[in-house]
Amino acid sequence: MAKELNEDTSFKISLKTLGGIAVLIFTLVGMWFTLQAEISLAKELPAPPPPDVTRMEFDMKDKNIRLTIENTQDDVEEIKEDLKRIEEKIDRLK
Image 1: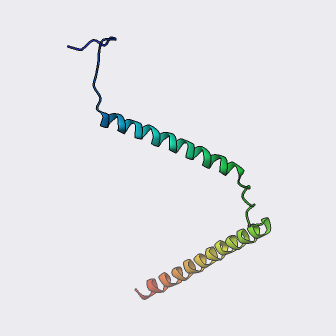
Image 2 (image 1 turned 30 degrees about the vertical axis):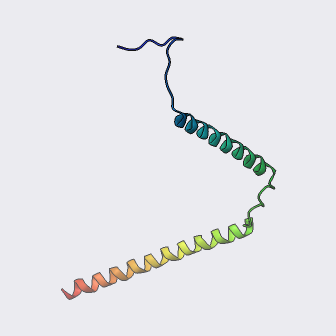
Image 3 (image 1 turned 135 degrees about the vertical axis):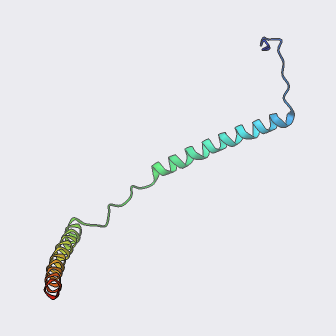
């Protein structure tokens, strides 16, 4: 049986609950204004400086990385050749 709500319906809230609700509302409003103040301050700050990495430096680092990869590939090829020779020697010893 659901109670019918009308203008004669009443409910009770303790003062402690009302105080808690008031504190919650004041906290939320305070946080809102603090956030708005920080946003407006952030809008006034100067733009961040451009990155320190120049195009030439980037190209040099990229070239260095590519050269390292190529050297590693050459080393892998040499290791494969050595492995083949070792396998051939082992096969001859059998």
